[in-house]
Image (cartoon, rainbow, N blue to C red; front, side, top):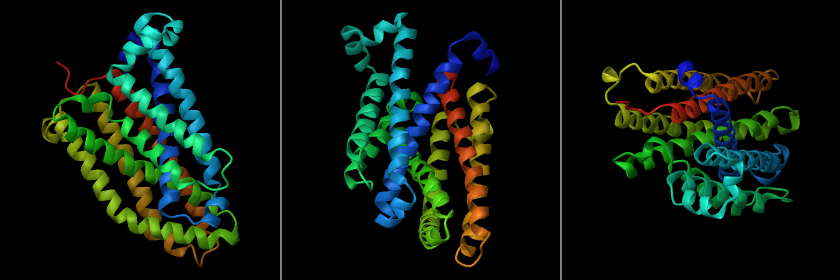
Length: 293
């Protein structure tokens, strides 16, 4: 990986932009979906979910625009090319163009529906869905069987976004004793869903990896596969912390005064794990092909 980075001086900036855009887009979409699925009005206000979704949308949109400019500069040699109508038209006819168009449209819709709102409206959900659907329009899911890979990635990302979206509301709800009931209800509800979400998330990711790389025993050692192993280790770490939350800490939220502190600490660990996963995925998709010749 370090050799690939040294051969492309702009790679670090491009990977960082991808990670910021992807990470905050997932957070925004996940926050919207979590609020639509679980939180009532009081819990939503207490968890500051509208502010989280709005901030994540702004950051993802800004990073997406800068990433578009960066891509145009790499392809055409100048920043001004990003605003050239001819260049824009040609790029919009490509998979990256489709990705940026749908992603920015989804983020813009979420921004439009949440600005000034005291709670997150259900109207924001189509924007979240559009943002998640955009992420399969680029990368290695363009290989055959394309629609199968696209569907698997979309399911995987949607479930990951919901998981990311529940972390901040849950952490904030545990800070004040009066919101402990909301926190316990949300944690228990999500914990029940997680029993279904986690197996599907893992199976979708595993089948996607098998389609791209083959059987685990046949995966060669190269940049993409090595980073995939790093990602799998990080996912295992997040799953382990999540299991600790679900089976050890959450059952004690109603009765223990210290359970909230422990839950916030483990949520921080999950958040760090997700940040590392997003960075790893951004490096994988920018630097490598899953099956190099």
